[in-house]
Amino acid sequence: MAVTGWTVALLALGVVPLVATGDDRVLLGWIVLVALLVALDVLLAASPRALRLRRELPPAVRLGESTASRLVVVNDGRRRLRGVLRDAWQPSAGAASTRRPLSLRPGRAVTLTTTLTPFRRGDRRADAVTVRSVGPLRLAARQATVELPGVVRVLPRFSSRRHLPSRLARLRELDGRTSVMVRGQGTEFDSLREYVRGDDVRSIDWRATARRDELVVRTWRPERDRRVVVVVDSGRTSAARVDDEPRLDTAFESALLLAALASRAGDRVDVVVFDRRVRGRVQGATGAALLSSLVDVLAPVEPELVDTDWSSVPALVRSVTSQRALVVLATTVDSPGSARSLLAAVPQLSRQHLVVVASVADPALAETALRRDGRSEVYRAAAAERAVLDASRVAAALRQVGADVVSAAPADLPPALADRYLALKAAGRL
Image 1: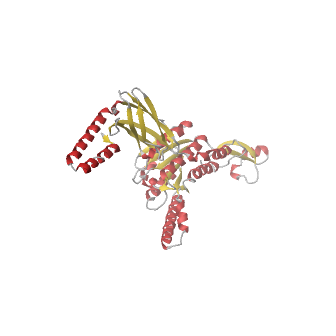
Image 2: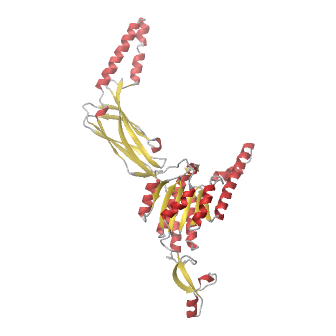
Image 3: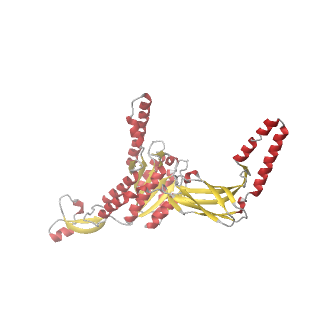
């Protein structure tokens, strides 16, 4: 049971007869009268337990977009229900309004629509519905909470898909659909043509040259059905926010764009999210099913406040493929201390695979390093310079042990990683 403001106001009116008569029994009688009215109002109020509730939810929504949650309310009771209904969604679900007025006659139904605009990825939940039925005197209400769970999966934003058309155009050039051909080791033979100045002498076909009495070179096209393995670090460093976006979300954006591009190139893409254990895995999917599986698997993954066990990553990659592959490690390269285990694991991978480390760079560090107007800003600039220097040292150490490093701001990292993939294709290394 709950009382309304009218009950409080009615009790306050009891001061008037008390002041007028000076008799405490008058105030006591007034309180008893108000209590009887409240009890009568509760008895006359419709039972909230007589309501039948049903949710209608969309299966998924992309982060940053809006969707509608519908709640069907049916009054199976004998009295008209007047009151308030509260649909308890998580704050991160971005519900426009959780409290709705309700006036429902017996046997009638109403559909209440709530607009959801989630601002966090993952499963956004609604646990219960609370109904407060107010009596005809508006002095008190009957209240009940009904467990009515509901889940809407919020998929990654994938805003980097706007970069896909331009990269696919470059991929078509590398794939031989235009006049551009690629020469170099590790690619598939395409055709023979006459030698022109600037061609690599290693591509000269001496047998064909002897038959034609002119220099002839081989042209190549990028190989298909190569392996691309993306390992996304979900450890504690991935929880940090850069440009108001978690590093883990930027890693997901990079993995999605690379997977879309590589699958169009005919390569096989496998994605594993890992810290001390596997948090998500997508293997064997191709084409449209690949992106569909990726967004569904990546959506509920959250950073874990543990240090990533990089010593287990080489064995993890071996469990995915035994062939030579492009292994992309989406992690953080910021300090020598946190990167020590990563530096120990990369040489084991680079002996068999082509390794690329993709790391988010904080653009605020460069801005902070330039501000030196006051004493406090000088100290901040020194700290920013030290952070940039530490990241550069780790990147240099990774290159020495055989890895390629791609570091950029959150908005620039996905296309930068896609460009590096295309550059490796063009150089015949993949």
